[in-house]
Length: 131
Image (cartoon, rainbow, N blue to C red; front, side):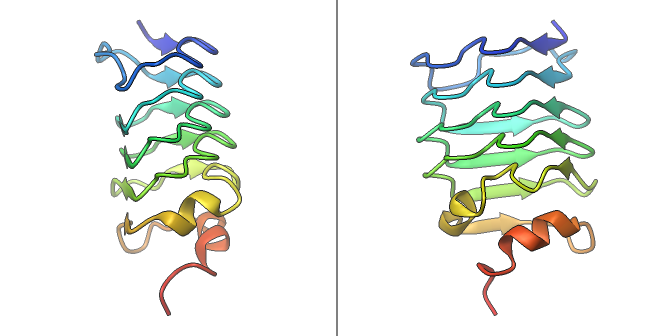
């Protein structure tokens, strides 16, 4: 298994991502949208499609590995999102990957290694970071 297809688990009642093979390198558009998952651990080099986790209202923790590509709206509407941790290799993502700021306003903990904050991410969260 190298990818999770479009809408594969969308709208289901799953609370955790099923154990997936190490060969997985892509989570397609809306694959886990509108589910009840609570945490996501994205391994190095993965590609996360548009809206892949959109509207996951229980999603509280996201760990993003090195050199991950995140599509637009991937985490939009994740109202419970409290912690996002990035690996040391800069992710590539769209300005709206985490919504237009609504998901980031709620975050209590942002673990972002110094020196890798992409400018698009800075644009999104600059108004919400402690001064």
